[in-house]
Image (cartoon, rainbow, N blue to C red; front, side, top):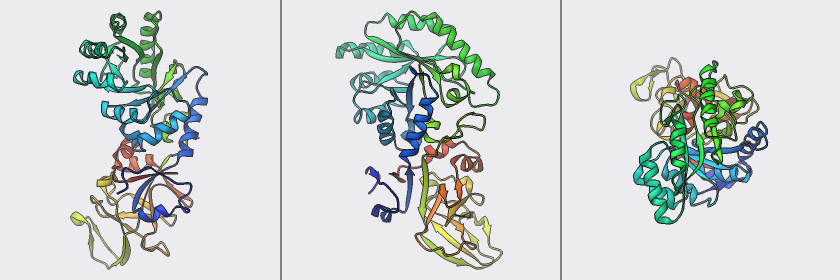
Length: 386
């Protein structure tokens, strides 16, 4: 009912829309704007920002996040697939949209038709793009990926200059950018990241005579930890959404979390001693407790690994998860929280009263990273923009 509707409200309390919701992700656009401007202030005057909005903008909603980013003068959008690029192109006609993952040769005509800039690192892809561009009477815009140590995709840095020069001679292809990607820029030891930057700079020196618009290697870790890596474009991802990729990323303490995950209590009951709860009977009551059932589960993207060890906030108090998190529901202990009633709001990520749960904390309890927490939030969870 709600999944395709763009909902923007000024304040939660003043919106009648909230009575229709039972589980939702609240996106604070003012926090997004603050984070983007904060990052921009850390950059030099002529350094462009590519807002990374892949995987539905890390679960925040790609279209609305892109709209805000464009209003803040970012110079490009970064996505991970052709389909993501096509979706955004239907809304945003002029901004460069860079597909950061390796495209398939069978997609060449679509890349040209929708004016997308794929990352390329093979002659097969270059040739298919050139052929498609020639048929349309345009030039294919590409970003050439240089592998400086990540080891996923890209032309190895030792021979990347030869590849770039050969591509530059193709009249149907325009090299819009060259790029690489850090593997360890958010770690305590930055030696490997500094070596990658050295390799990339050596490559750039070899092609400095070519008219290439964008040079970029810097992700969130690079932006904050390695200012020499900014070049003339950076690619902030998690930092736009107000979360640090690790404790070793310096200078991002002022970032404001953008996403809160919320639901409402669906049912309340007293449970007597000696009863078990949920699949597998992994929780057994030792005394009478009061249990709240929440209509959210791993089918919405909330980790099953938080069974019996995670918690939520209700009335500003911590309520421990009891038993297994199931696909659509889970149970929490509200015995010691006064005045709890059906349809009270429970916060799974975010702030309530003086307490807060940040995505990094959820990730640590689940043994994963905040990227996975955000991108796992299912599309059936309605996004509401504040």
